[in-house]
Length: 468
Ligand SMILES: Cc1ncc(COP(=O)(O)O)c(C=O)c1O
Picture 1 (cartoon, rainbow, N blue to C red):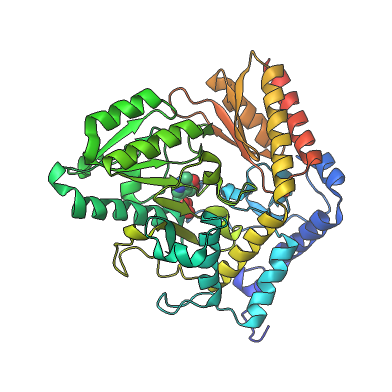
Picture 2: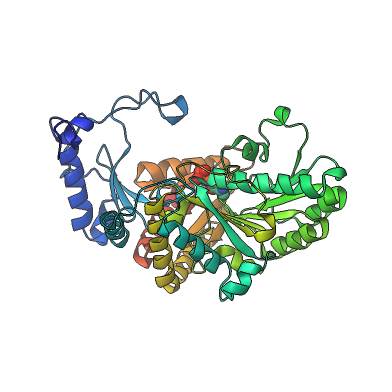
């Protein structure tokens, strides 16, 4: 280190070196143990990693574990699909971090690319008025992905096509907010004489933590008085037609996620989105597809291509940079390029190094597309088999590919399954805190193999047996 007081030991208050030693031993263990060896130890305490005293969470907000001051069980180090906690328990991460670590922890090609980028002088961030080459290149790549095979010169002139990218947003919430503002501004400029605008959203939606995004899922109703939200049940075509018939041209926007990772992994049917597209066209509403969860997780890279619809606005984030620095994007039709320069940015959202990683992440998805498709189907099919084997406990498997959940008949069973899974080293999520919700969620990182899929589903079967 160039300066004393600037090393890990002082910055991390680790003068005894125990945290550094635990991290080093943990990394060695994860990289030197073969997958079969790691699978054999999931849930176990890994004694070759020395115990250490870690910072606690006393300054965190209550909802993030402020009360946990002794023996925090947080993440120590990770590799691929596995991680070790600070208490040295080995976990199989069935959710790719918080759904954003596309390639798991420490993917070697991406780590090498990151170091390469730093050595080449790619900056970490800079002013959004002077985007450096990786940011511009990523914009071009997203357009190419949104319009496979298109003649790019013709596309650039065609404002009816997805030919514009807003890449200056750090998180998905800001990219979603940009799409909401575009929908509002467009309404104001073209349809305001119809009355207060209406947003049609799917019940159980999640489009970020911005206050208006939260309004779109039913929060803060008392503060928004001149814009309405109508929530519809996903895949209920009759209801959607009824709502469009009732509100017609007052509808400013329709929003959907292809797979509702915040509502029990409900997959939206292509015919439903096609209907929504037609209804939006008829009423002049803007259709937004939020691919923050599904983007970069399927062989097509962007899942909307499966639905044979072109949204007006497409939101991307999370997995785009494989978890390295948040960077999100809004890809939209040129005719909706109606916001002014600072109407929708994060000032740290012009992250060149993150964009470079984003290009690497996309290249990996494209390179491994076939395998991603195959393993994804294999895993989903195995989850569907479980639903067939335990019909008294499970309703069905939901979602698609690596993003697959299990819908339980009883909320208590879903909660018990979740508790037992986490206690035994399988990190997954549960939706069981809203009326009628009873689903466990997985979203494996793309390095998932058939071996790991077999292991995970066998372990799920064992847990289901205790509930049957
Ligand atoms: C579908 C969807 N939209 C928007 C967001 C918000 O993204 P971010 O957390 O990056 O702000 C999320 C985050 O989980 C999401 O899943």
